[in-house]
Length: 456
Ligand SMILES: Cc1cc2nc3c(=O)[nH]c(=O)nc-3n(C[C@H](O)[C@H](O)[C@H](O)COP(=O)(O)OP(=O)(O)OC[C@H]3O[C@@H](n4cnc5c(N)ncnc54)[C@H](O)[C@@H]3O)c2cc1C
Image 1: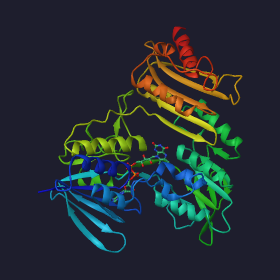
Image 2: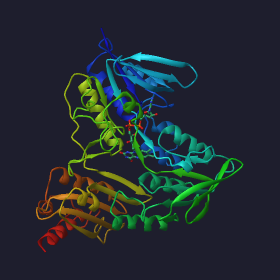
Image 3: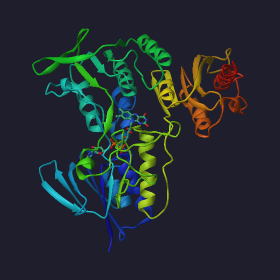
Image 4: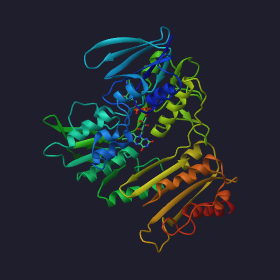
């Protein structure tokens, strides 16, 4: 008799696991049912800012596979607008509510894939019926925001609350749509994913684009007129707003898992083993923004909610569910983003992470350019390296620059993944031609500077 796999969450991790399991087990061997409470499956939340800005014209371009494709290509029974509200591990069944009014159903499972993603941080002041306040966690959220922005007359003044990479990308999107944008951040700099000295470059560039950045400012509430938001109140005064976008970070969406007694780790994410099996619970798997994972440099559990990990973890779970063997190797915290033309990349530990993990280290900042200085389009590039003292092992790297900066972080990520020292790195055979780098690539310039600093 066929086994039954239930997937909770129809996006990156959940559908990657389902599709991968199907590659090894046909429909007579494994029946797959996926519950998704939203209107879409397998969409790119990462693309939402670019659809909001208009760079990507059509929402459906963000959808990699719709339910019909999942059904036809993989024989997956996708139930959209169905929210799973309970998991019973003893009876091995889930309870789901049909959000279109169809009532409650129970579905048995042999295999459960938990892939519910993350929950956006929503402070009390944002829990409101006031219209014009949006998160951007899901494509449904993005659609609601896009409709508001497309209204006639369109909103003119936007306030983005939170200066993480999502807040920064949304600020860019709103600037590109022609809104006047204020970004409010409680910390001293936006982009806390990089060290403050590098974040300052991002702040300066955003101000150059016309974004009004208010740092060290705490939001205290919203003002409304006729049920629509008309200002954001802060401890430093009121900021007029026709639309408010929240980018205050996320936490793992584990409420259902916790209620079912599944193990939660110190970061709040579900505890899984290397094969993405929920630790100690046979037949239950998890992946994506709802789980915690191992940081390969600090050796500590971390919650790093990124699509790149969600897809890989879903695939690993699916291979194992399909009867194969695969493991997820952990993360090193590589991430890239941009604000208009300014690119930001990071990998490994920031200074504060290296301190918390108990490393002794040096850090250097090297100024260089993306191309040979004489070649048209040469622009500044700043590379920061953090290296263990005295071993010289690379612990972390950050790059801010105007073009070709973001993906240069991948060179550093590979070096870091392979535990290279900055001394080893100075000898790397990296490509050089004037349109692509100076004779000494910015990565090599930074590595040499770190070697000098270690020798001091
Ligand atoms: C605006 C934005 C930009 C981003 N940019 C990047 C980027 O550039 N690079 C990058 O690597 N990552 C990026 N990310 C992060 C990336 O989108 C997530 O890490 C990824 O989507 C996580 O996949 P997931 O499958 O774990 O969770 P999700 O994509 O959140 O999917 C979980 C799904 O589960 C559903 N669900 C939850 N609970 C239930 C339930 N009880 N019953 C039924 N369904 C349920 C939800 O509706 C959701 O569709 C971005 C995210 C956002 C929001």
